[in-house]
Length: 470
Image 1 (cartoon, rainbow, N blue to C red):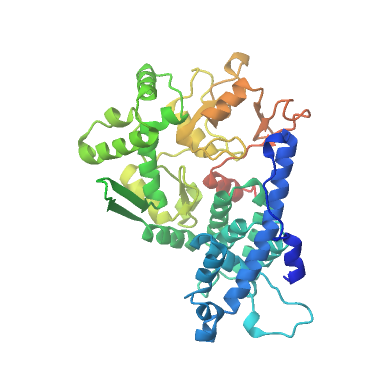
Image 2 (cartoon, rainbow, N blue to C red):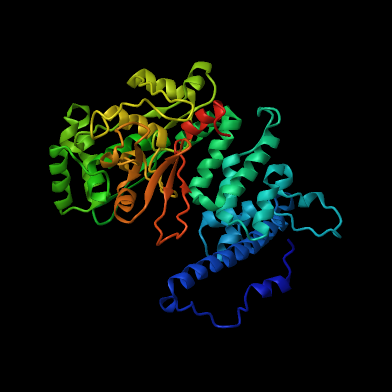
């Protein structure tokens, strides 16, 4: 992709005054079509911006010293110069430069220049990613998520890792349309861990090293809290906050009278959700481990649940995951958690189904819910990212139609999607060992089923190991 003054002119005539479209006058179909078209235009503009940022970085490379473009213009780095020009954030500027360096802008007639070797030449598995950006098919954020998630290759990497990373990059490119940027980054990190188990431990260590907490006194007497939590810490803190606030945030409804009453009291609480979360955290710190957790968090105590396949644990290879967290964790973390909290074995058959407890009770038991949560990894509705702690168990084959209270006849749905299934004509079906979501005729006259695969990375790994998937 070569950027010229002509191609820049084609992006838009900057001499013409700009006014946004009158979205209020658009029909629903026109509104969605406009958003899709603007997204494609945005990707093309971003590709041009990344290419220019990459060239700015090339002309500011360290070997040029003070003669580099950025330093001559008073900027310490090309990223700072790009940020100054674009008016964006430092993160946006860094992403533009990183992705711009992947894109090869040389023409066929241009004489080879070793100094112009693109970052994709050093990481050839990223060339399809760079080409997708240059063609306007992939956003800068998506490309940077794939790049960062797949990582680099060095002398300690397994043999042939570059070739397998190339296949992983193509897989991510195929699936990028169905994932948010955050999910795409997480999926890229997970694929890297599957190809190189040591990457799971390295990634976990890097995230843990970035954790911090700052208390910043403000002039008005308040104190601001800012920080970053590594996945294991986030699972524990998030579990506590979820338990304290979930009835107000659309979390599970309660059949137990005591929990139902507590949920109603919390719904009437005049505090905001954020205030309840802060007050709960302060109360937890104050009472520490001496308190009755039900007085603060209800019946559910905060916990970190580690999921790992028996094969990985027995062989000492691979990795595990923390329920509700997408990034893999090392087997060292798995063993440490098992040592301190014990292990609850949950057995699955080759199709990913757990133990069937039959039709003896109307509601799924706590043990059944644990198994279903481990299997589904969160709300199974396509595109939903609600973790297990926010979900309820739904009977695809309803109790009134003879459906049993079994593991197979239970799936996790967040409250929003559970109500959507029951009230808006959607259905969940179980066909050929897989769960699918069927839209109502008002959404899709053909009612074509949509795949609803497990959100659990560990279950996907187990099915891959047993030859069912992958």
